[in-house]
Length: 218
Picture 1: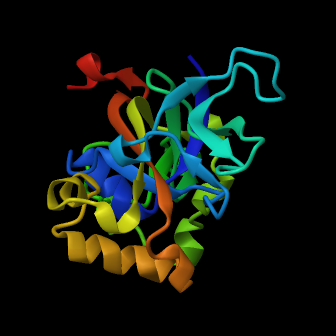
Picture 2: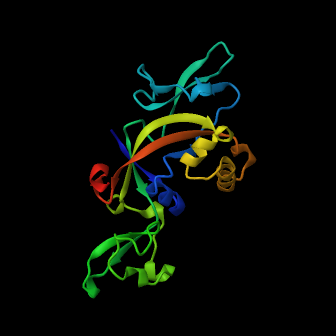
Picture 3: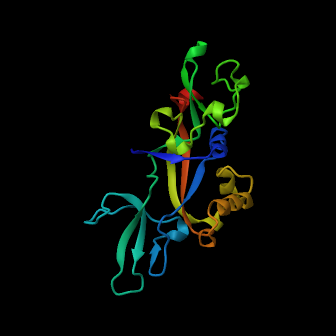
């Protein structure tokens, strides 16, 4: 089992915490072009490891064929940057280290996705200023591992073209409709060539929240 960081914006963290988001789609860095293709792409891709002598030997990913249609086809693998089923993803989100020691409190971490009147906040914290200077919110990319409160376990990895997402899976992405998901994707990736690209589909479940295993946190 390996553990890797993954970025989510505030709305998506809220959706995960609410149980509305159990999938995420991320672009495949190397998109297939003329002369190569994913194996078994029509059924979500063929995944595994190359066991023979190869620069990517032992790495998990989607099998591909290069030089398709030539006299010298090659087997290769597109390595999954998010890992494989059973691996863990620790969530990086917008956060703020808080030092209340001068007011008789302690040091803790606040998260933009958590309402200020949450039980995880000290009494009266909902009256704290909400402006960026007072809170000193830090971007998710800068979150260190010690500040993470949310850990996910990968339950499935597959390949899919963005436009092929179903209404059911759009809801599992945290959106009300497929149309809403596609609209958001096109804002994130405005290049028309990316609007129906291949994407990693990573399905997951929460296994740790606020330092507690899920059976403890429930």
